[in-house]
Length: 253
Ligand code: PGA
Image 1 (cartoon, rainbow, N blue to C red):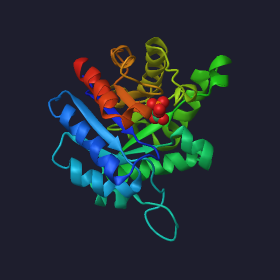
Image 2 (cartoon, rainbow, N blue to C red):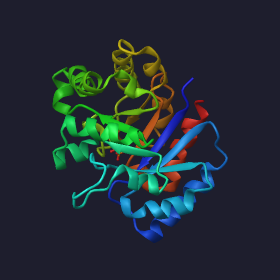
Image 3 (cartoon, protein in one colour):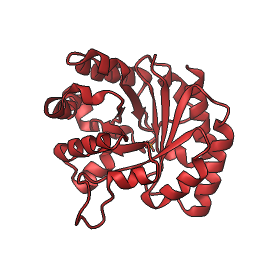
Image 4 (cartoon, protein in one colour):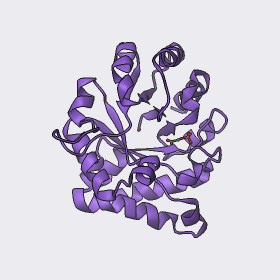
């Protein structure tokens, strides 16, 4: 039985005072929920604040990217070890907003994935197809290509203790979520592809869904057998909406 996990992705939002209110709201509502893992991925400058406010709570924290190099002359980059210094446990990698705006290649993402694992961070690897790809019926092929890069170059066992977030690009920030059946079918496809190479890694891997998850659609998405949680963008900026999604996850356990 895989434990469900709900991850807040704040993207480039926040300020010290607002974060404090938001995290206090999360803490208040989530303290009583014990069947689900909760994570908030904040912008780098707020890691210290997240650590300070969340260290004695049931909410873990993480970042939204890291450098593929361990250290050195890489102006503007943040290393995996630095994230560990702030007791991060998770890092989002390969988010489509980064791949499109900052030209992240598959090779870069694979390097970052391995870097995260080498310091004990749990990578949350984002994969997803565009609307055009879905409309042309090639979405499984696209997802397979994104997965195969890691599978072939790093091996299926890297998915032990990792998280994949299936994020159809057409659903991110659009208000148009995938249906529960669309999510289930793609999650099953992902798990089966990994299972062909490593069945226990595939069974323990948590595959979460991201893309316009909100309090109204969360229960049905999270009730699907291969949907092990959610990555939440916009609704994570409201304590009420985010915690309602977390409650829905907790109730499905
Ligand atoms: P959204 O973002 O919930 O605002 O669609 C999801 C994501 O980008 O991870």
